[in-house]
Length: 74
Image 1 (tube, rainbow, N blue to C red):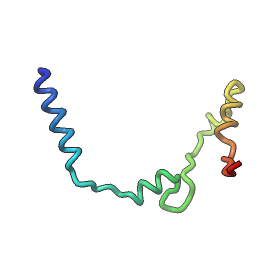
Image 2 (cartoon, rainbow, N blue to C red; image 1 turned 90 degrees about the vertical axis):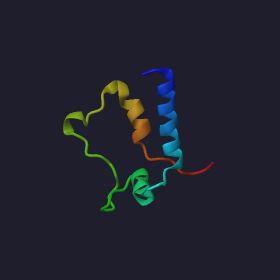
Image 3 (cartoon, helix red, strand yellow; image 1 turned 90 degrees about the horizontal axis):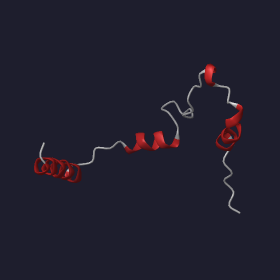
């Protein structure tokens, strides 16, 4: 495809995205971002027992991300 045709197609797609009406489910998006499913449970994923052990070299990184967040402002 030539550069002119490619640019015209990109322009058409960009205009379509810009002027298309928004049909977003913001409640569902908020639920997904907060990590809660429809049943009110937290969104933590089931961990396969085969992968539940953290290798020794990654233990410090895992501890950093698995520790509860400290929400206090100093």
